[in-house]
Image 1: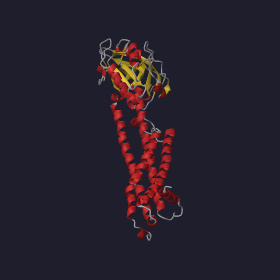
Image 2: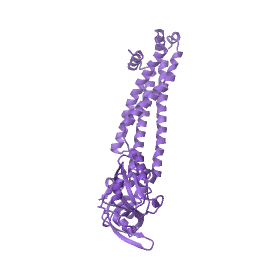
Image 3: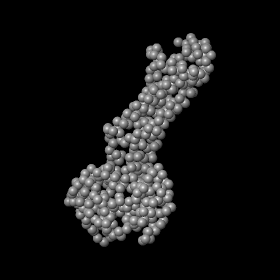
Image 4: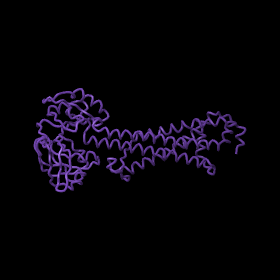
Length: 415
């Protein structure tokens, strides 16, 4: 029989000392552990939700890896690169690449009778993955984009529609300023999307790849670049290394040179902001673990003082200091376990409430999302539980040595 465990269980289940001060101390310690764990679960769930939601939004606009003309790197201008069918097949065959889609960028001005707006027209072809845009359509529909003919159909953002007072089905003139002339096109607004990624929604509208190429004066097999989707985002760096070795610094048929960049390199400000959230998480985790440790330490000391007479009796009967310390550590483990259970219920309940109801809303202009995103990660919650238990028990080892200073003769007369 494990004597410390047996005694600790009897003390923990004893209901005959409700009038003593240990019961409030136990409750406070339990609440401290529960609140600390609940805050950690909610914090980690929010940060994971933010990081993955914002990452997916950025990837939805720029994919995982971009191929382009080396002249376009770091430039506001879009330079053409030749990406024909054979090039697309060769790139798609690289290990780790799951999809390749072309795009062409050109700048223009949308103008109504009352207002005008400078935007970037992103021309896309039939191979373009539209699943991300479909998730964020708020009005109308996505037109069938082509790389062989112009349909004069346009997909604009909700921000553009509100500024220009447009709706699906409206027609609008677009002006494109070249070196020597101004060209005009008349488009029909086929659909309106809203992703809440302000920097993208203010900038991009979508049209045919063929139309964008013609406006830029490029050949049919040229475009601004290609967006590559990887099969496993966790191995993005490995796939990117293969792209660099097999594609970068190669020349196309027009002697333009290929280069590439990941979504991290394309939008470093967004991902730097997300990395700063990790610092906040570690600070909160540290504070909450300190809260649990302090409440448990004070609770244990109160319990030891109240059980001084019992400690003296155990020592008189031959119990060693180590056995008595283990008894109170087991007792503390029971308290911590109960606090962890309450904290799990509270923390997971709050996460699920926000996940399915969106009760906490945010300003999408600032946070890129309209409600606080939550991601339920069971393995990470288990790690938080285990870490909290181990850290809390560890910080109680030193206070438990107070038992060695209790003398049997004096303690048995202790009131």
